[in-house]
Image 1 (cartoon, rainbow, N blue to C red):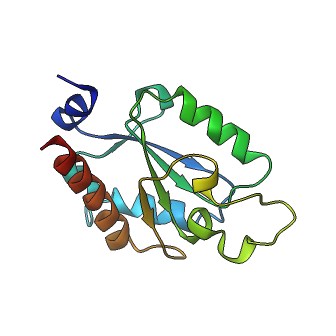
Image 2 (tube, rainbow, N blue to C red):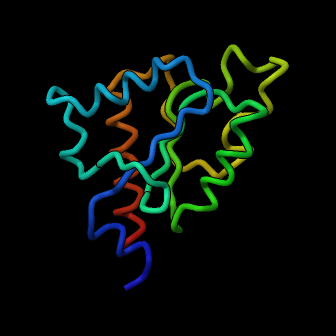
Length: 142
């Protein structure tokens, strides 16, 4: 059984990192865990260690301090590790595009598998993005 097939057998464990966000996206991610939206029904579970993660959930604009830390965390994650960019800041830097402290969007630092735009994205959009990731993994298995 290959590495990708092993991920599909169990639920996806998610490690969330905030790379300098305003916390609106973080609040929406936490809202996804409430009984109203219940993202755990898709097998997603937030965990506290990158060494056990299947998915890296990133919020916030990449700045000079967070980019090297994020790259190190990505390298520590077991492979394959799928990256989900939540919010407009990691997708395109939004209002921080020409700021003195930001360096680039998330996909210039680590490879991104799913983009969830919005400022902040609604829980429905986050769930739709996670469903796309699950679909992508399911279709890769066939």
